Length: 229
Image (spheres, rainbow, N blue to C red):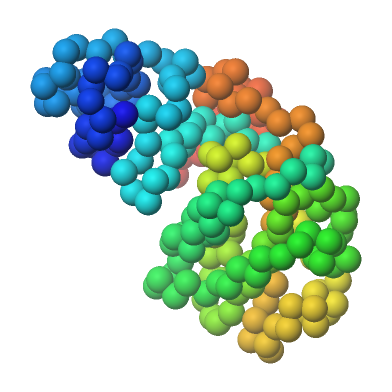
């Protein structure tokens, strides 16, 4: 088995047990020479055994690449009721914690709970039915805290998709009721409620490359949203 640690590779089992390796970075093609192994055939990521390659930090698994995750992700609004493992849930929440914020104030608190507890306060409670868990993003303080909340939310949404977990953000219809239920202080604001789980019809990012997913996205053309100064 081989583990990726940044741009370095660590052999953790005898090479004789390997039949192939995924090279995601041209700079890693020195694998055989650096590790004194016989030359190993590379293979496309979609054909790889995911057990062969993994990040060297906290056992985080390698999933789709970042742009493919962005291009292939869509909101999941109908969940199948299955659970999400605790370690996956923790990584999703950690992705939110790692988001950037103005002056590194980190103005957020993530309130995790049963989706049913949050359902009465969102615009469409059906978006939470069958979800494995929900996260209320609560922010406080001064500055661009709404923007910071969005950064944390997007981190969690993309981290979830990287794990094969769908999600959708939900607007707040009953803010007073939500504040009371969450026990928010006067300084705290509820930014959004995210629902996470496996979709009834879960898409497979590996079916297309990032460019194809981008082309199929129901978004305005790039030329319409970009202009030069």
